[in-house]
Amino acid sequence: MGRKPIFSTTQMDRKRKFKSRFMIFILMLAAFLAAIPFLFITSYVIYMGASSINLEFFTQLPAAPGEEGGGIGNALLGSLIMLSLATVFAVPWGIICGLYLSEYSHTKLASFLTFTIDLMASVPSIVVGIFIYVTVVLTMGNFSGFAGACALFIIMIPIIVRTTEEVLKLVPFHIREAGLALGLPRWKVILRIVLPGIKGSLISGIMLSVARASGETAPLLFTSLANQYWSASLTQPMASLPVQVYNFAISGFENLERQAWAGSMVLVLFVVSTNIITRYIFSVKK
Image (cartoon, rainbow, N blue to C red; front, side, top):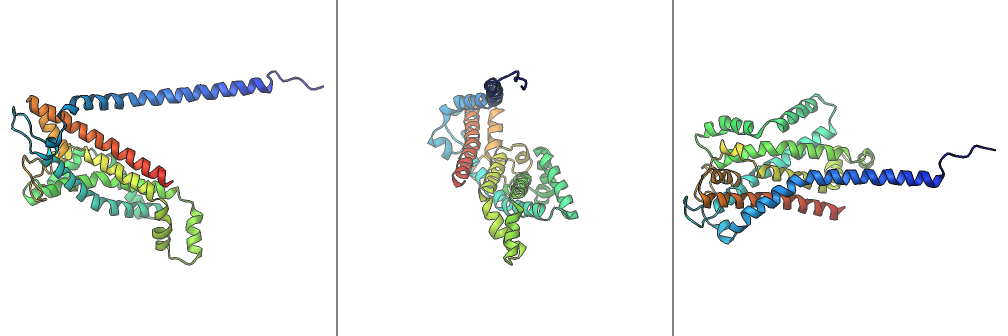
């Protein structure tokens, strides 16, 4: 007769279930602890800034120090213009670079491009601002919205390139082979078969880059500087929300500090809503 097992099957099942549930609990606890700083910061910013939010805040120019009222309409307009311009140029350029790195990764140019993108992703944003100051601002002779858009462009590019490259790697190779077997050129296979299949993930990466660039202050201090008035000219200094929040926060005037909290609230809610909407659209398309 064979030896009897030390533990019965039922006991082993219970032991495995206990370990599984315990590890799931540890993971949930770690996730909750990681979210605490974000929840605390977000709730505190909303608490400090909600009282200053009204229609005038979004449509008016900043008030003079010590005076009540006013808003950040010029900063919202400036941020919208510079972000839009940077996105228009960064999206196609980033997708093309990501396509090349994914489809032609064995070339020497791809190795050099990968190294360059890694460096761009690790460079502090203030260094980007100084670079654009030397190459664009000094060349044009003044601070400008165009220079600010150039700085945001450089910040957005690595995120879009990396997102495109990594998502394309997830597409099974047999899908490409099927298109090539039908006699399609490789560029048509990429543009008409591969890219449409990763559209949702590409949109997520683009929105992530927009959210990242929207909160940058340091590069805009060296490029677009600031403007207390309405300015839609790309050749003139232009207001932006992060810089305006920074200037209001260090002003020492209570009314401007309250508006700095309100501006911070707008920035935080923009980033959060951008990520939530993108993830929702992506999950629906799945």
